[in-house]
Length: 44
Image 1 (cartoon, rainbow, N blue to C red):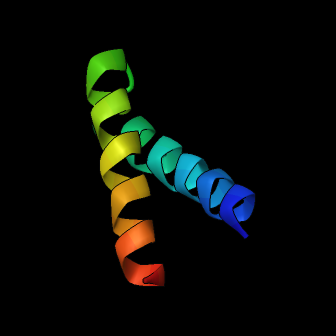
Image 2: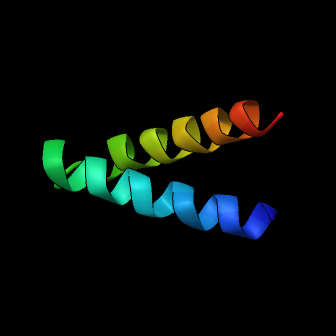
């Protein structure tokens, strides 16, 4: 289940990042961590 959440989080973040700022890898990393945290909270 954890692997699935991480994969979904990555896909979701990639979609948002390519829509807003595809040339900011740092922002992408922050969005990825934020999305991962939200998924954990939602699953809890």
